[in-house]
Length: 234
Image: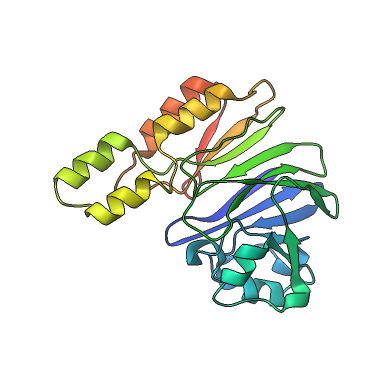
């Protein structure tokens, strides 16, 4: 199984999961021309919420393939540029569904969007991926996860330091606290979950100004004891 990141920041997010010759796309915040995979071959496109860095190119991507867009009703209605309604497959939190040989369970996350979700994905090759981004907290616990794709956006100490220097305004400071996953909160989440079958971790959506990729990698690796990758740089 292979995970490819085409963008993992506020500039744009998009990930391709390949398993047993099948492709699943997560997020649509990157221009189709910048995606090296054959978009026409994807089994489906999943998006977590409507913000442009995650959904801006959903319509363009759907036009280039024979598959559908999977998201919540709230997300679809909030999209600025929607695919045709017959290409929209409504999903609901805590109700699993299939996209060909992929089994997917959406779950609620905490973000300033209409109806955001994360995904627990059972792949065609029997791997289990937990995908959680743009959330400051995950209320659920998960078992038998083999691949963890999780946001690790900022370090509170760095954020506070940048705020004191005037590099971060009060509005952005407050928003980050209630919309994105902080390093220490990620570590607490990891410690609360079943890591017995974990094979690797992908840290997503690191802040340009409030993170330290190597520090984050080392801190998480100390907890999981498995390879840790920084999406967009590895």
